[in-house]
Image (cartoon, rainbow, N blue to C red; front, side):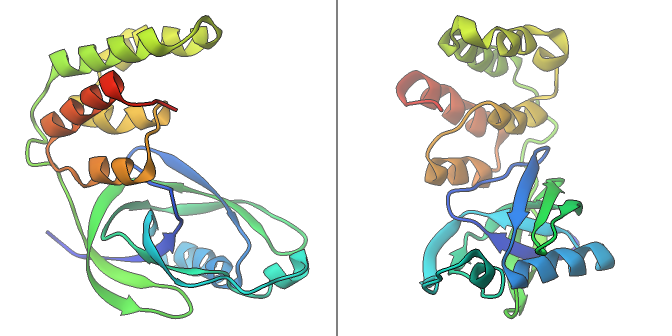
Length: 214
């Protein structure tokens, strides 16, 4: 598969999935520059969960200092989702409200640039069974999720019972479900890295049966 240059925005505890839109509040100088560069060059941005902290954040006393100094540096996971970024709002002090539309899942191949922000070459990461459908697993997950929702979530219950939600392709469902469902970030990373729709759906079903849901 064709490799793609992607700029990385490592954010601890945040795992994005294809089909999601990730809102960002961008204030560090390096990432404001990254957003501007990537929009100009039509380069996708990947938002990724992190393995560890490489360099801690400096001690800052004011918001103005935070706008002038880069914060902590992290080692990203090798698998992430990425897509085009757009700026929603530029504040008077230079901070950005932006959004990234996650269009694809990637795996890092090599590093192209480290400073001022990381750019990697990455290859798309498709599912091994991308053409397969698993309606029974989808139905079981949907039924379980609906049963966990209280009466105060009636609009969401109605949406999960609508035909346009229940009849979507299994691959799309297996990613979009995380618009409403959250587990521990390391578990979410495992689900993102899983390259089998069937296995991913089975993992989700098992987690709904045994683990806490957010």
